[in-house]
Image (cartoon, rainbow, N blue to C red):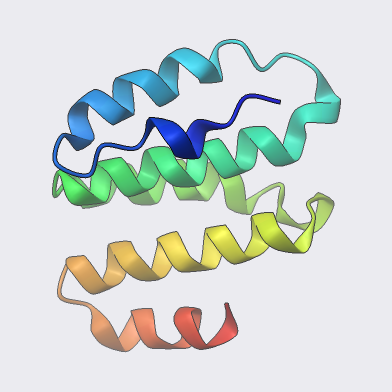
Length: 102
């Protein structure tokens, strides 16, 4: 499995987004559902850092539809990133329960 965490550049989330999206096209096998879902959460994080909050939520909505079929780590990443998007978009009241659940 490719370790996308090493590709993070928090100073350049737009570049990180491009790197992550290039990895996403490589994910074809259904057995890679967790990897794909986690990668999508990180794409959402890059979008949030770019203040593209609506797009970040759209990406997280894709993840949410598959959450029942994923491992706890994937679910935690989803909760953290959804919370971060809410928090960064000045919706802290919606963020807090997600952080607590994570």
